[in-house]
Image (cartoon, rainbow, N blue to C red; front, side):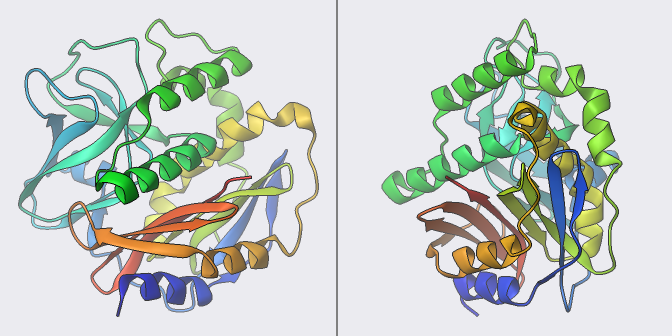
Length: 309
């Protein structure tokens, strides 16, 4: 099956569960008719089992790249936007990657701590968060443009830093190294209130997220267990945007929002590239949508799409 067709087939097969709303953030569960068993580990699982190492590419380091070594016999899923902390500066992943077992690969990342370039540790650790959704949306567009124009998976690093600075200013966050993490740490309790407000439903493999009643993004995985492991990180990423936009006032979610997003995905343009690691990297673009999907092992492992208006 062609990679783009796999994405469209996966999206066409989903259904939506009843909306769950806390404050101004609504989560609409995405349910798969025929979910699969996850034949890979998440980042946190692999690091906990000491099967994965993430390091700078050299002693000198390179801001947009890191080296990943999978010493285990199981593939590892790295999630788009997942934050890696330590080494010379904190980074986020530029896309979702399935790291093959017994491999060493170079991965594309973006810096989210532009005030530090000094080694704190030999290796990176994971964090309990993902790049906030509005930042993920912008970076997804940037990486897609980079792929189409030059074949690389670079973000606009200056734009990433500028966006973090503006968001930190609006939220009243302070950091000597301009670390994105400071926003999450300073708002930990309000963010965790969002995390605890949503309940998984049977067969759930993802969710559509709405802030103030407007669709902002959707993440879909191939397996319910993957969603259950990664949902706290994803909710935190949307909670930051909800808190940032809280002053706008909550609006009731449109009951047809899910159908509209599905239609937008199915009408989007696609471009397919060899993935970093296993599989294919499918990029989706539309008049009001940006997205990316990792297709490997005959199925769509992860799809993320974002509203761009």
